[in-house]
Length: 308
Image (tube, rainbow, N blue to C red; front, top):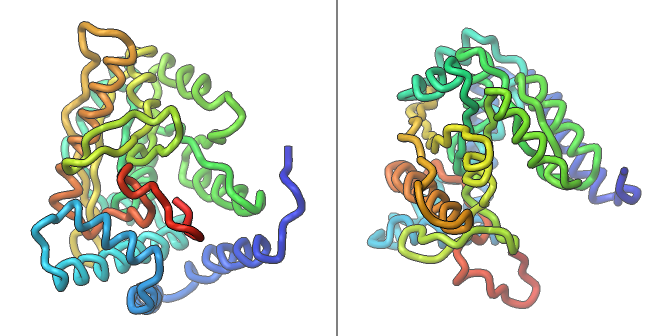
């Protein structure tokens, strides 16, 4: 069911994204990269809410960093974030050969061995580097299509753009709302297929409280529950940029389902294990963690006029 008629702001946002997908991919690559850096640097200099939130989040990751170090990290983080967007706008035009040459994922055998044996796999990632590019690498280089979940966006036409974009990369996309997403994911996993979920932030009542860089945060229960209910292998993944063209990643050791305890206990333990794996990768490459929103529970008491 479609939402209410889009506002002028909705149409503007949709138009800007449409311009990105339609225009940026036509630019010469050095020009697109320079444009991304320029936009990132201007946003960083304005010191808006997103930049300040990124810097505050990075202060948890690098607690002994000086103010100058944090500023440098947040500037690099904004450049990394805009690189993600520049790549994403151009990614539908990349050849499989280009994707294979520009992406290197360590220990990908953990994925292929499980899928080849007929076992489903859940890949859980934080917001690092370019998770869409990693997904394109899975579908093209590894040759495994997968299912993922997308949040409903406003306007509806913007959500449609994102779905079409990800489907063009070989992904099956199901909406987060509507109540059917979990069932669809579970069916795919029981059929021995692959599911990929970005899983480092969940501020809803169903989020699982974890310790993350020493403080309480909430992360989604879905990956752990899916693994428990379907017998799928749960694998944490972290990503980072290495130079102007290469993106690297690591498939961490699997998060096993505990042998004892209630379902809630098992879900909490497994989600904490995911958080620990994410923290390892983020600590190694903090500038490539694109968390421009509140995450820790201590930050959720918003001041008047602010949103989470």
